[in-house]
Length: 128
Image (cartoon, rainbow, N blue to C red):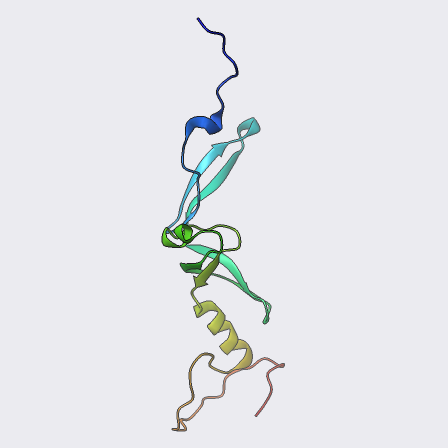
């Protein structure tokens, strides 16, 4: 019998790396020291995102992975990694903008002047 040169390593199993996907929620617990548990995200459909220029964070849905500089395969499989460009649902940000400024965001004005109801606005909103 031949002597063992070195022991087998866990990374030599050849498993695919666990990468979180943009799909409905799912997580897998991993065992930690002293019966603690840590959850690895396998599928994510929501996240906490911020509108940086307006300083308004909101929990919103992840719609799609749009671009990834490292690999197009990650875009096709909708894999979420650090620094990938994603598309999120704008509804909570639009609602915050309308409540804060009193102006509907993202809709073009029409030529017809319709009656506008008086809505409570922020003190920072400019009056016309």
